[in-house]
Length: 185
Image 1 (spheres, helix red, strand yellow):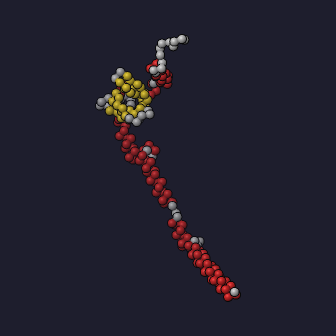
Image 2 (image 1 turned 90 degrees about the horizontal axis):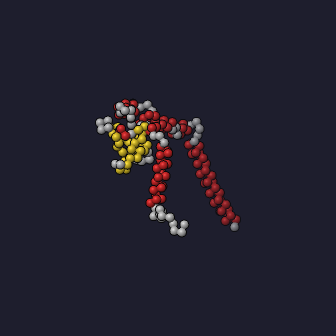
């Protein structure tokens, strides 16, 4: 039994020595890799220095903003675009991006007036293209038919009256509504 015990003990000690040697090799390798003051530490610092990358990113974002939103930055192309857009101002004072109140025709006899934004002015035909608030489509209307948004007086009151009128029409046209008095009443 002593021989078996000695054999098992020596095998365990051999495994333990191998593990200890492996751990020492790993520690030595890690020490060489992350040794402060060595050239490898300086190289690691250079690898992880992102200041140049961050600077390039910020410059590209800034350039993108100047291209997309010319009014937010100083770019030469934005200044050129502004000078080209100014001649579109009509002699009556309207210009692109002005807010106005424009007619929307449901039928030739029925015009409804809604707030809108001017997207294009055509002085030769005397028309403007507008986009009504809350809608995506562009409508072409006569320039004489648009008014400044401030000139719309009682707009909220007019809208409330129209809504009440629509509700009254819905009630009067409902099949259960009858103008005749109910029997027995």
